[in-house]
Each structure stands twice: as C-alpha cells, then as structure tokens.
Image 1 (tube, helix red, strand yellow):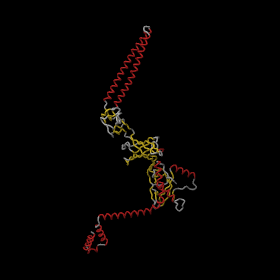
Image 2: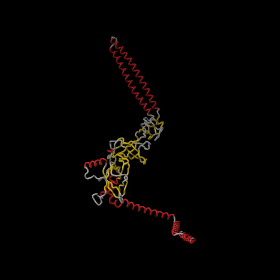
Image 3: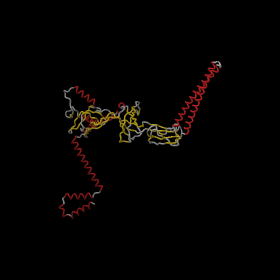
Image 4: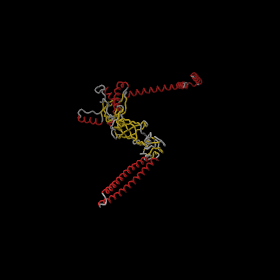
Length: 480
C-alpha cells in the first residue's frame, strides 16, 4: 500500500513538475505526511493517538509539578474556611412503633369477616374482623333472663318480708294481751328473720348473674375486633372460615401499629454521661442513604445491657418522619448532637498534627532554622496579672495550639485557639483568618522523615474519638 502511495505521489509530482516552483517545502511535507497517515490502519492510528496523549499528559504533569514546587516550596496546603462543625456521639439502634396492639378473638369461634390486609391504614373504631356470634348471642340472652328471674325473686322475698313483719306486730300485741304463748311470738320473729335472709340471698344471686351478663356481653363484643387507634395493619395471621381464639394455634389474629415511630439506640458506657434528655439527634437508614432524619432524646434507661462484654445503655429517641418513609424494625445509625457551631472558621486536624512535626524538626531555639512566629507578643514590662487573665480567658473559651501557615512561600508558625472538634477538623476561635493557607504536609522527600509522626498523631486522635465519643477540641495528645 505504501508503494502505491509513493508511486501516486511521484506521478503527481511528474504531472505538476512545471508548477513545482510555486510549492514550498512545507506544503510538500504536509502532503507526504497526509498520504502516510492515510496509509495507516485504524489500529495504528489509534495507537499513535494514545502515545501522543500520554506524552502530553506526562509533560503537563511534569510542568505542573515543577511550577508547584517552585511556587510553594513543596508544601501541601489547605484553606481555612467557614463551615459547620459538629461534636456528636455515634450510636446504632432500631426503629419501632410508638404504639402496637396484638389483637385476637377470646372465644374459639369461626371467623366470618376479615376486612383488612397488612399495610392497610385504619381509623380508631374501624371494624377489622368478626367471628360467628350465634352461641355468644344465646349466652347473653340466657344471662339476661336469669337476671330477670333474680329480680322477681327479690320482689317475692320483699313481699314475704313485709307480710311476716305485719304478723310479728300482731303476735306482739296478742302476746302482751296474754292471748298467745311466748312460743308463738318467737315463731313470728323467726319468720321475719328468714325473710330477711331470703332477700339477701336473692340480691346476692342477682349481683352474680348481672356479672355473668356483663361477661357474656363482653364475649359477644369480643367477636368483633375494632381498631384501638389510628394506624397501620402490621400483620394478619388468619383467614375467613378459620377458628381463632385463645386456644387456637395462633391466638394473635392481626397486629395494629401506629405510624409514628421511635428509635431505641444503644450508647457506650464511655459516652452515656454526655447524653441529656432533649438533645438533637440525626440518623440515617441504609434504605434512604441520601436522607437525614431528625429527632430528640426522650429517655435514658439507667439499666445497662451487656453486648460482647461491653456495657450499653438504651436511649429512647423520637423520630420526625412526616412523610412516613421509615418502617418499624429498620436499623439506623444515629448521631446524638453534643455541640454544634455553624458558620465558623475551621482548620484541618492534619494542620495541627503537621505543626507538631514541623516544630520538632525545626526547634525554635535553633537560630539557623528558627521559624517565623506571628502574633502579638507580650512586652517584657507588661503586667503579669493581665497576662495570666488573658491565659485564663483563652483556656475558658478554647484550647491553645499551633499551625504552620504558608505566607510568601515561607512557613510561618502561628499560635491559635482551638474550639470544637468533629474528628477531622477544629473550630478556630482565634489566630487565623478566612482564606489562610495552612500546611498539612510536605514534599515526598521531607514527608519520608516526618510523615510517621503526623500519621500516628491523627490515628490516635481518631481512635480516641471513636471509642470515647465526641470531645471538645484542642490539640491532639502531645500538645504544645
């Protein structure tokens, strides 16, 4: 193919020999290259294009590295910026309904109606299921008739009592007149006492039979299951024409649960002392990874639960879910908010760790490598009391620390006052301004000797936070 192309070029050159003087050398080279490229296969063209792209990327990265190294001295920096910082304690838990009712028939009768299915919304008083009430109706009617007989018996006993009382009064007058004997008078008295006993017995039987009426009526009412509150049907364990009751295989026919949920979370004993009723809570579920739900601490259970030889305390948390996206039984990860600052200056914890490494390798008492330390110094003749008071105020509002700021491509050590920490950054109370470039690392050659110290400090800080929960900010262990 290349030979054909070359022949074609030669023919064209021969035909246009007379006009060759008008073509410059560059045009001839372009024509040759164009024909050479046309002679390449697609695979060869693609390979050549990839080689060109790689060369451009390599050259660009080399240029970038050179410019960056020449501009910032090989330091890795991050900007001081305003953000929200939160100190929170992590906990895991499970959602459950605020109210839940397991319902079933008391009497072993056949189910005649089942009006709901799992997931149905129900209103308080809504009829959910019914069973055959023929026998129960008969029992109620029989109990009512027995009560009516008892009421008649009481009336009869009262009538006898009145008659026997009149007889006693007559016998008393006759006895006083000497007409009857004392034995006849005593008989009349016994008849009155007997009537009183009959009335008491009839009244007692009436009360007992009235209780039976109430029980029979309750059994009849129990043949109809109604929703005890507004909510959802959680489960249905039966169907029409089945027998359901206390003695059946599954006495619970259906479950009604409220749509409002609550969260029961387990908090490590190391963190439970920081939990207070009313604290805000944010939690997420794997079902909605992009949503953050909110709630508040409602109750702290004082009795611990042991899990893998670690003591945990259940904390009850409300759940704000107006759209009812969550379901009972879901596992969630919660953050109990201990403290939060919004729109405050923050600095990466790596910057504080790097400052420790920097000062270790560049001690301030070494005049040759003495770093530039910015900030207002106390004059030698300043009042000691004033200095002590300033230190106390700084301690009360935060903890002292140091960072290294890149200024004019030179590292400058600055004293700062650090506040709240969330495990990755600190709140800056004093000492830095928005936009300052703090050094968090250095070039590869320098980091080889210094990085282990910085890495160990960050790891220890993270470990302390994970095991002990969120703490107020301040420099990591081994502070200044």
